[in-house]
Amino acid sequence: MARLVDKSTPIPEGFERVHISSQLGALLEKFPEDIVEKILYSIAENVEVYERNVKHFGKKYNLKAIYEQTDEVLKKFNNANPVKASCKKGCAFCCKMEVMCSRIEAEYALKASEKLDGIMMEDEMEILRKQVELSKVGTLEYALSPDAVCVFLTDDNECSIYEQRPMACRNYQVTGDPARCDVIAYPKENVAVIAYLDTEAMRSVLINADSYKLLSEHILDIYKEREQH
Image 1 (cartoon, rainbow, N blue to C red):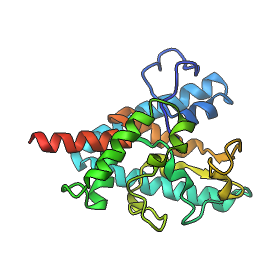
Image 2: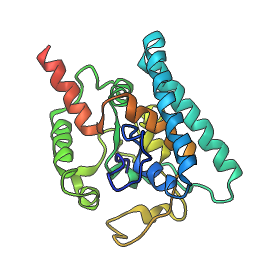
Image 3: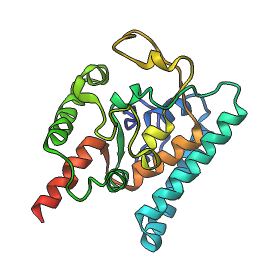
Image 4: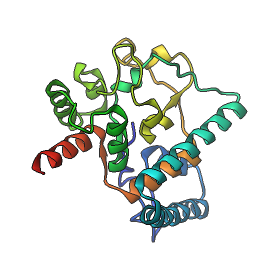
């Protein structure tokens, strides 16, 4: 799922420091360079706006605004697009994938789950540590591991932080039969993922404005910092 764009993605001169999601990188390959420059410039401007707003309203307020705007855009696109997202409650195969996010997204998710105050169990912490190690192996190997399941997924295969889930989760939508997202049952299946320029650009603002890495790694860092205090 969401990784920072790699060095092979062409970035126009002057925008080398503007980081974007791999999904946005793939979308930009289809646009002429002048349009790509405008999009990257817009992201850079919005990062500055985000950082100014953080000083006045705080990170949580700005994150909620981005989430709400993302949900609104996705809803409009799905209503207008003949190709609909087929994701449904309870399938949860994407909850076994790597999730990259900003630090504030991880804190927001923890707060929503009530795990921020030290309720994370030791077995969950061990799963988080294993997930960090799995992320170094490969995306497919990660998804195939029994330790890949998100710690926020309930026994009923429902997201316990759905309203506060990270941008990577919000933006991940597929078409076709959701059952084919099961990489164990369909290891060679290529699932069609819908990528929206607008929402990927919004996610890229968070990539540039905050520490961005694996959700599991953020959570471990947060708990380690709490222990030190």
